[in-house]
Image (cartoon, rainbow, N blue to C red; front, side, top):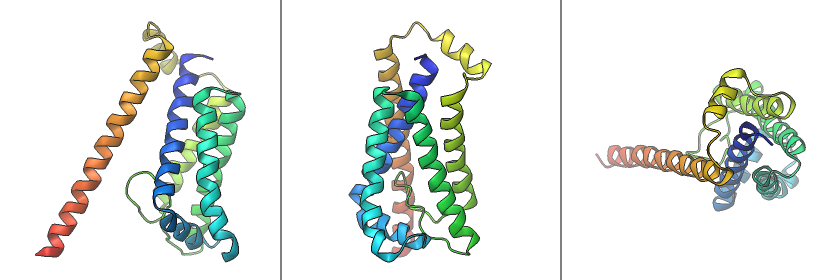
Length: 183
């Protein structure tokens, strides 16, 4: 496995695990997002709300471990595509439920979120099928002195930095909204 594929696997694996963790922390909110899309009978909403985070964790762990990377990336592409199709279906029917994404703030479904999720699906699918574009190959060759452990540590540090930044910006927005309500 090359450095590019390792980075893609690790990044998408952590993304899925972070999304699953947020869904498990607020299961009712995710169940409401599933119900809001109105794609499943109400009897299946709770089972879906509990099974999706489990699938995300299993798939995320499979991606990070590098176990059958081509299959894992294709499964991730299918999962992201199904999320995108569910959101697009809701929008086309005039519904704007919560996205249920699980990472960051809870926001209503939008075409931008559909595009983002579709981009994740396309990126995972292409990463499983073709080598990276020349520019990324040059970038990875330029940093090929990094060991796998150093690359993983760097990726984790960047992920934590991004999550910290996101938490701070969301926290600031919440603080500003509360201050506005107090006035």
